[in-house]
Each structure stands twice: as C-alpha cells, then as structure tokens.
Length: 115
Length: 109
Image (cartoon, rainbow over all chains, first blue to last red; front, side, top):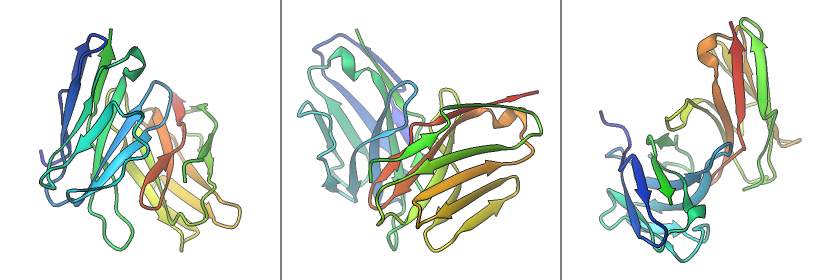
C-alpha cells in the first residue's frame, strides 16, 4: 500500500498527558497537511508543510499543538497537556503541489480520546 | 478561504433518484474546488474536482458545476445506488484546503 499512513489509528490518553501522531505521506508528494475532524463536521485545517518548511501554522489550535516535518518526508503532530476538548480525529493528507494545484490524498486518521 | 457553506446537512433519496449538494464560498481567489466522499471510519476520498476555468465537469454518474460569479458550486449524483450512502464534503482551495460541514447522504433501497 503506497497511500498516506497514520499511526496510531487510535489513542486513548488521560487529560494532561502528551500525545504524538505520525504521518507518512505518499513518497513523491511535496506537501503535507494536518486536519482535525470532530463528529458531524468537515476537516478543519491546522497546518501544512511544503517539503520541510512549515508554511502556515497560525491555524494550530493553541500553543499546545506543534507539528514537524524534519526531513521533508514523514511528519509528527504533538499535543501537549491534552484536554478533553482535544478528542477528535486527526487527519493527515499529502499532495504533489505543482502550478498552484494538487489533489489531496488523506490517510485513515488517528482518533484521539482524552479521558 | 475558510467560509464554505454546504447544504443540505442531511439528504435521503430513493435508489435511482438524483441527489444535489450545494456549496458557497467567499474567497474569489480560490481556483480549485474538489468534492470528497467519506465513509465511516475512513479518511475522505476525492470523487471529482473542478478548476476555475471550467463551468461543468462530469464523470459517469457524478457531475460538478461551478458558478464563479455567484461563488457557488454543486455536486450532482444521478441514478443513486445504496453504495453512494456516505458523507460528502465540498472544499475550496488556494494554498490551503477549506472544507464544508458535510452532507450525510442516505440512499434508500
């Protein structure tokens, strides 16, 4: 399978703990996006990378959220001091961005439950 | 770029009937408008897209229309089948992709 993969698929944690999600994009894709999706809502944009550069991070929900893509390949999304309101599905997507366009390919998501 | 309105939120149709979902957007600079289908427990998958230099695009039973002047675009599914039942999202894209709130489509056999 050469699609976008996310790990873990499910994470249950206690409030106050830190969690990290990993995303492996399609190998030739230069752009990588993180979204959050809550029940009954569309994906909510968080941040994106072009290669290793984080081009937009103002949409990260708070300073407890951070993302990295150190070598322009896989990416991690970390949530520090989790709160119950952080419970959601975290989706990663990648695209081959050329000439101001590119189809988004999504992973299956990482579902976070904060107790 | 982030104000994408999608209607209706739920839609039930009889198998074989048509389904129409509508979206409006606010950013006149957006030039790419994809539609995604999301099944339970899975990530969204692209089903059709349209670029700003085109008014209509069709792929078998699925079509999308775009009115840039009015800033709205629509998804049309004809001859619906039970496997079309899912949540559908529209999106507008510049550098980021902004999604609508989704339409839960149920096709009744």
